[in-house]
Length: 171
Image 1: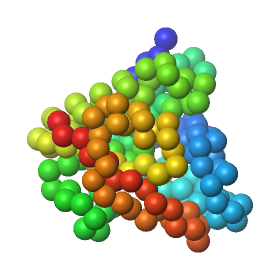
Image 2: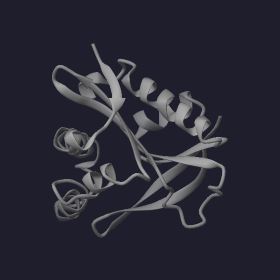
Image 3: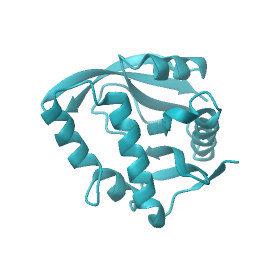
């Protein structure tokens, strides 16, 4: 059985381990090894962005946990867009990661429902997110859940720049 709950600072290590593994499984092939290593060093580990944001009250995390540990998470927080799309009425979904062994099990949909509930409770009328243009599985999931492509974002992995799609769902 999967338990859904807010993340706490005590979850930092298992959350970071899970997130790094999912990121590498999804994107590890997408850039030169040095760029991948630079990205992972910046975002994961004891001094990484993920753990700093876990402690930042501007970010909200919801975990999916079972007996084996963290199997998914959703992170909401301030937008990082610099004018690419309007953001005033939207909440930003930064990450929705699920262990590949749990794909298709409903974990992602449940975490997305949580994000919608948080956005509504804050009086927002939409959710924004980015998804790599080559991540067909994620793009299909978001489209199935009502997200539409509204703009593009230049996502940097080390020295490489990739095209991410900015997607929006009205609530």
